[in-house]
Amino acid sequence: MAPRRTQQVGAGPSTEQSYIYKVVLLGSTAVGKSSIAFRYVKNDFREFMPTMGCSFFTQLVCLETATIKLQIWDTAGQEKYHSVCHLYYKEANAALLVYDIARKGTFARAKLWLRELEKEFLPDELVIVLVGNKTDLAAQREVTFEEAEEFAKSKSLIYMETSAKSNHQVTEVFMAIGKFQVRSRCTGNSTREMLRSVPALGQTKGPSSPVSCLLTVATARCPRGNEQNR
Ligand SMILES: Nc1nc2c(ncn2[C@@H]2O[C@H](COP(=O)(O)OP(=O)(O)OP(=O)(O)O)[C@@H](O)[C@H]2O)c(=O)[nH]1
Image 1 (spheres, rainbow, N blue to C red):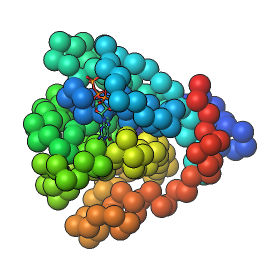
Image 2 (tube, protein in one colour):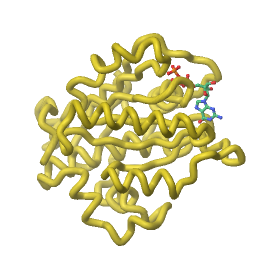
Image 3 (spheres, rainbow, N blue to C red):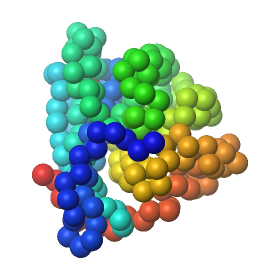
């Protein structure tokens, strides 16, 4: 089932379609949500940027078949802001559940966020990416790739690891969201169904994982420098 609340904003430059997707970043404080958004939108990294309430960014993703405007909502992870977070993930099309691979407690917290989302959304209504951030801290890793991937698989989530600091796979996360949404629209299959359709590859990470396998299907048209930030 394709996402229900996607806004279609008409044809793009040629015969392409343009869509607006709302993406919300959720997770414990200091896992790197703002840093991921900042890296993606500004291609920069700052050591200190605490979020109060919520920040908002937009970014265009140009795919072969469609142009997508991502509305990126970066929520604050501090407990005092928790009660307002549901206001931000309302009407979302995709969620990034971010944890810090070097802090096991943040992985547990991401699982709690998932439960909250499961109460608010139908199973195929939201594309959810579990994001293990700070891969540059590999020596301090407390959550293995395999543990997180296994959990993601059991819940039909996309799983990816990033480093906002070293710019590892950050763009790919947002591209994944765009591509899954567009493919979902084109094929009528939900992300769950698409992930299920490549089960044999589910055991491996890297270039042959289900995510990267599906990502290669729709090739990006714009090089990063040509993406517009509005
Ligand atoms: N080593 C490393 N540090 C990172 C990475 N991403 C973020 N950080 C650092 O982690 C700290 C928290 O980053 P933020 O982006 O503010 O985290 P947040 O999840 O938005 O935090 P809240 O706004 O409190 O919810 C900062 O000191 C960042 O510099 C990363 O990939 N690697």
